Length: 108
Image (tube, rainbow, N blue to C red):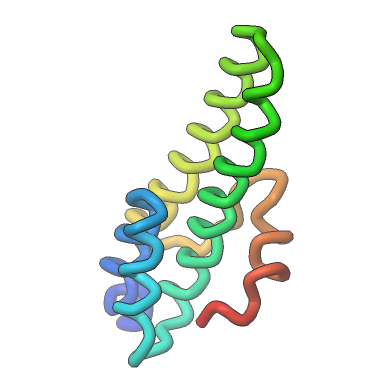
C-alpha cells in the first residue's frame, strides 16, 4: 500500500460514518487534498444523499417489501464502500459510484 493511500485512509473510513462523518472527513482532507480520501468522501457523500432522497421517496409507500429493498440497497452500498476504504482500495460502489464521482467532482 502506498503512502498516499495510508495517509488518506483515516479520512476515507470516517467519511462512511454518517453524514457528519463525511463532513468531518472533508475538513480533515481540506489541507492535504489526498486523492484516496477525496475518492471515498465523494462515494460516501453520494451514499448519504441517496439514502435521504430515496428514503423520502420510499416513505410514500406503505410496504415492507419496498422498505426492506431500500434498506438492503443502502446497506450494500455503505458496506461495500466502507470495506474498500478499510482495505485501501479505490473501487466505486455498485450502480451509482461512477455517477457520484462525476456529480461531486468538485469535492476534493
